[in-house]
Length: 121
Image 1 (cartoon, rainbow, N blue to C red):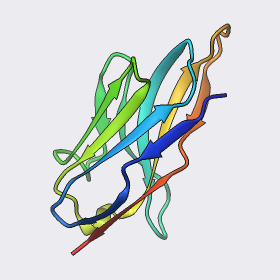
Image 2: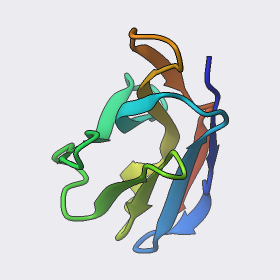
Image 3: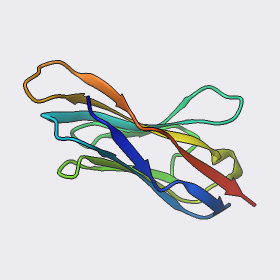
Image 4: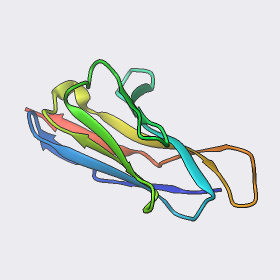
């Protein structure tokens, strides 16, 4: 199994920017789709953005035009650049990836530990 290590969360003023990173801790045969989710207090987990192995991206309507997802396949890392942050962006953010281990033809799922993003006025 792979471990995803997140970094970059913290406290930021409204209108500011933050960049989250999520890196796989071990080598795998391939990393397929990657994405970011978030869970705000009292709400269900929400899909924020996804990126395919080919680089196609999708975003939740609430973050379109403000957030950018990207990936580095050599470093096995996915990023989430968050600009023009709003108070309602406050949540715990989780990265997720689908991967295939060496010597396997099956796809598995991995989650990061979560990182807190707090936006203040």
